[in-house]
Image (cartoon, rainbow, N blue to C red; front, side, top):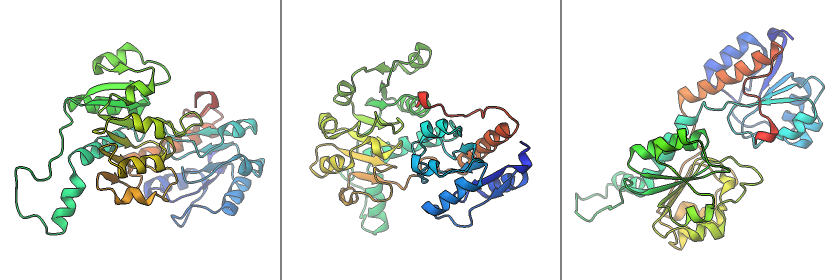
Length: 328
């Protein structure tokens, strides 16, 4: 199937350079608004395209895939996470799924550290004080936070991003601990002096910082539930730059409101932009609007990966970033 004849539908506005390159290579229908597609628009897209380029905001579920036309053969996700796509159903219908792994690894790891520092050093509180014109000078006991050097960080999910967080945390002098489905190779963990915890409960109860870096799957839904949050030390901080569904948001809000943990830094939320209002009211909580991968460089790299996946598919080969259900 020649690349210049592929019909490609993009569900959201992408960086201009990415859209320009797609227009050169494919018969592409670009989005003229940054609003997510409606259900009817998504149905029309899967019925009319050879390739769909969705984002994490688009629910590509079994019901939608049941409406897909015979032409649809590739879902080239713009993003590394694919929990919005029913990959198993797509596979059953002969539709390949690809994503963009690695494009946002460094950016997300940087944001994890930024949130950790923002919470422990009370940066938003200091910013608010300055913006309100309420600062009346330096004082030995004013705005005291805590240093992260020497603290223990427990990384929940030691994939690409988790490892990148570990590298940064070690450079800050932190002790690295992690929980994963299985221990990593010594070649990875030895330079980090990382300690593996088979028991998540054991790790959570002993850490100063918990960093959530695992994907959202049925097995990770509410992995940080009320019981596990209660295991955290009262001086501990919880940071999430992965997926909001991994944390029971209501349980976290209660723990923060009651002072059961020291703080939280969140870039993702269980129900998207519908955030528990209690989280907005606690001064020890830093909230960001899903900015982890929001760099010019990262978003352009994601687009390039999408294009490579589509071109490779068009040339009759398996996309290099094809997603396999068994690996999720």
